[in-house]
Length: 230
Image (cartoon, rainbow, N blue to C red):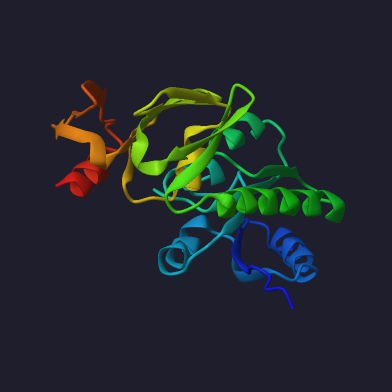
């Protein structure tokens, strides 16, 4: 029998009935393990710190901290599917590379479509080898050695991947390429830059120099970046 990948997930929603609905939907799908449902996002942090979580079903408008603020606060967040009663957060949701954005009440058919998107995303990640990734640029697929990537620059809905050989413009957000790389060699130093530590030639508290170019270290990233580099 073919092995089926198992994925662990959390549900975070301040409405217990919403947690129950999604929990019931997940029971119909074989390869998801629900680690818990939480009405408070901060309570879920303990699980996120202790367990490997592949996917979070996350409400947006919640007391204390909303879902968008919460997922942005996690350095390497799991994949997220937003579940909300409000349509007006969709563009913000996809800024954090959400898999999907579901508006309540959520029909099972629409929920299943989101799950299929998650599977597609996981399959793309699994297709990457340990030493290279496939990047699509200008309708062509390029096999790029991970060590050859110098740094990656955000261009809103696109990224510019600077490599030893050339630069590739890809339709992808910076958080998306971070998830695909999943490599400790790469550091997010700024909301607009991810760099390969291997190519850093010098750094200060406010910038790194890489391939002869100076890139700023963002204030919100400074503590983590300096800890990693030192």
